[in-house]
Amino acid sequence: MKIKSANFVMSNSEVSKCPNEYLPEYAFIGRSNVGKSSLINMLTERKHLAKTSGRPGKTQLINHFKINDNWFLVDLPGYGYARVSKKSKKTFQKYITNYFEQREQLVCSFVLVDIRHEPQPIDMEFMQWLGENGIPFCIIFTKADKLKPAVIMKNVHGYLQKMTEDIWEEAPDYFVTSSSKAIGRDEVLSFIDSVNEE
Ligand code: GTP
Ligand code: MG
Picture (cartoon, rainbow, N blue to C red):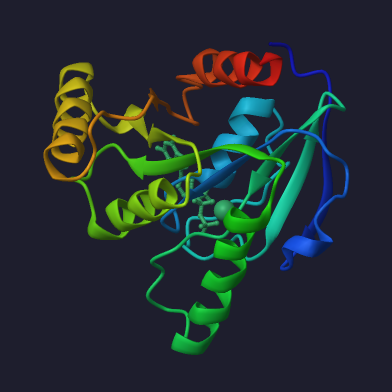
């Protein structure tokens, strides 16, 4: 798919104030610093569309980016960032869960996990919660440039195997990406294209 236009539309912390157009949207979620905002920039080939940072906790709101005038990418704050206070952590999580529970336009979410890490309880719990709420998701393994190809496959298979051993009957669809090397771009965009056509 060719990205002809990619425009920031709005940021907010209330699902009721998100764009009222009824267009399909794809949300990026995962631990702080996993590379959600960088991936949006890689997919759109716009370096500074979503704000990124080496320090976790950069994205704080629900951010809508309109693509090709007919679908949205949504950048969300990360979870599992230890340095936010307990209270702000609670409100933070509430509007994210509201978004997932209430946003009818959400057709698929991408749960990002760092390809170097073993399955983390916080990600497992979040995916389980998505499953229980009937919210479709895929996994995106990020930062593949940090590993050699053989280790990439070993980690991916280990990760999916652990998921199916624990709670999942079958492994979700997944993508291997690197935002710095533009790995996985065509695969993710083709997937979005196919869902948009359904
Ligand atoms: P929050 O908004 O804080 O939740 O973080 P985020 O998930 O949006 O992460 P962000 O895209 O801001 O990236 C965090 C850090 O990881 C930055 O220093 C990025 O340059 C780096 N990073 C992101 N993607 C990649 C990647 O594919 N490869 C490498 N090597 N670094 C990456
Ligand atoms: Mg971010």
